[in-house]
Image (cartoon, rainbow, N blue to C red; front, top):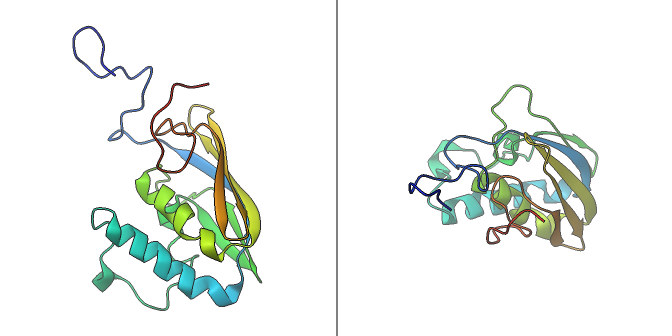
Length: 155
């Protein structure tokens, strides 16, 4: 959307180059035995989307905790559970890379929810059940109501 002068209307739509800080939290049941396969799925998703991932720059033994910055989160593992928190040491700005991470791990997640709070107070979540992902709420970064969905006006 643009204003009367053709400039981007930043009140109604986020400018993607500026950055949008997020605070994720939640817990997912993703068996530890599936961790390496989940990482491979994330890397494949990143490679498919505009070559975000460079296979030569990573290890085949990386875990989800190793690639947590892609999710714009900190991730810790507690047995078969992975826990998401705010990335205090990185630059937790949302992007399509983060969306790709959450979608790519879905086939490996048995259950759980990750809540995301955006810098402007927008809140959305990803609910996982039996290898499927469902988004609840309006993504404050891209204005979608489903992962990689089209922009919709804030409800």
